[in-house]
Length: 323
Image (cartoon, rainbow, N blue to C red; front, side, top):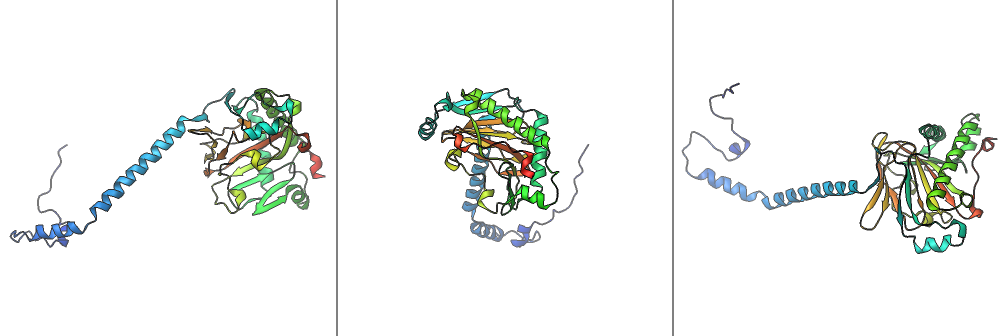
């Protein structure tokens, strides 16, 4: 189809007006001088510099994201039977765990599996988490629910959920089935840690804190909301020897951001949460890590912690907590 071109003079641009160009006047070189004068006033060097810096930043972000993707340890899209990676035990971890001869791992490291916890069990525990968190919740971006101690995030502090439920006049929030599923899942996670690290299952003891977590994009209000800092579990909780996480929602579907990052020298290893996925690792300085800030949606997980020191063992929660 032919394009029709309109005849007549083109509309003057803003520059034409600023330069006082008049098509009816004879050219005397004044316009060119005016243009050169205006051009000399424009900070071309700054404009070019900023443009190049912008391109550099775009390239850096692109390259970083591509590099990080290259080191995905466990993708949300993949159903993983069992994958593991060995790392050298830190000297402090070896010194501490050597006190418990039957609990020393055959190697330090980390594992991910999607076949230990069923989707039904994960869905059940997600409902348990939401039922409990409905009685509180942090004003910042991170909330926790500990069924062992009863600790529940509430505004900028914590309350006891069992006391809150009693004060509410009902004991029907949690059911015996809730605690049964919780105990069964804890036992399965204990078994896979025992298998992967080569230690007798009866030498592992559940320890405090073990808790549900809810992470959202809300702005942090207290230090408890700032979950994205690199840390070592055993430095925060000396009783820890093995740490595990069970994910209850899907990365890229239920939330964005919120990936679990193992920090390594030279490269990081990323675990993308998947419903029913278990990630476990030795708790020493050989496994520094952090959780990426959640940028949208809500991330739910259950942290289950184990010790080799029977003195710090805790029991599974039961309905007796509500009596």
